[in-house]
Image (cartoon, rainbow, N blue to C red; front, side):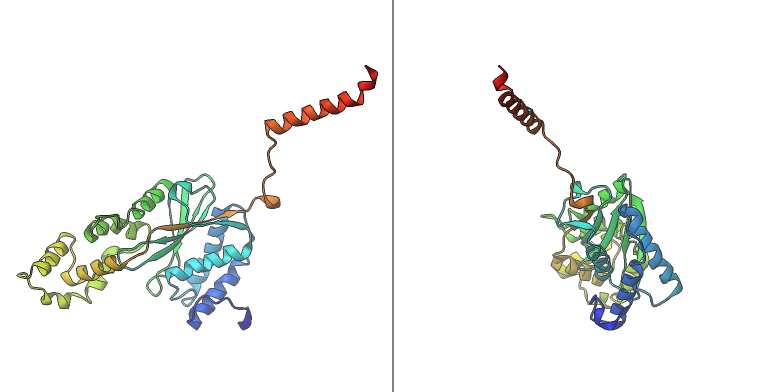
Length: 277
């Protein structure tokens, strides 16, 4: 792909280059109206390149991997786009671009595809420098349960500690984070600051007590609580649905239409043979 024709995914040249390379590879996959097969075929070629090339899709954040799939789907012109759908409106064969809340960051993005029986889901996502594009497969009902839990994020009256307990298994099972290692790695940056807390201070003592309830250091607990307080991201789902052939379904004849046509024929026949009476 020549320089002038590159898609602008990122301002970072090496990230933009590898995403354009990925887009080019995706074009070698023949379109399949079975979305589950089609997206998995695209992922398989990406995964092959990831296995053989340490720089392929390196440092691609979750939002950018979602943008990559969005470009592939939009530029194909094979899909109708349905914005801000509800969980109940997810259909078989849907490709979903989902903006999700996270307990560890201001946002997270995943791409998911539903099989034609609406029994299985493949989920694609990345985490920048810590994890390149990867896939998680799960049954649809489990996936739906996780989305329903995410949909309650920051409900009125809910505190950080409540959302933390609810989102922790989602971070692990839906997002694919090794939560134990992730927390340990990040806590190392904050534990040296734990000595700043005074148990005699009412507010700081509350932080200490709450952090103990969920097994975090006070300083890391306070950092995550702050992220939670400013996080405005909520669950948002966009569905890509394969366009019907020939631009749409043939309009079904209604009983009323058929009845009117029959009456019309009777009237014409009556007028035609009236002179025979």
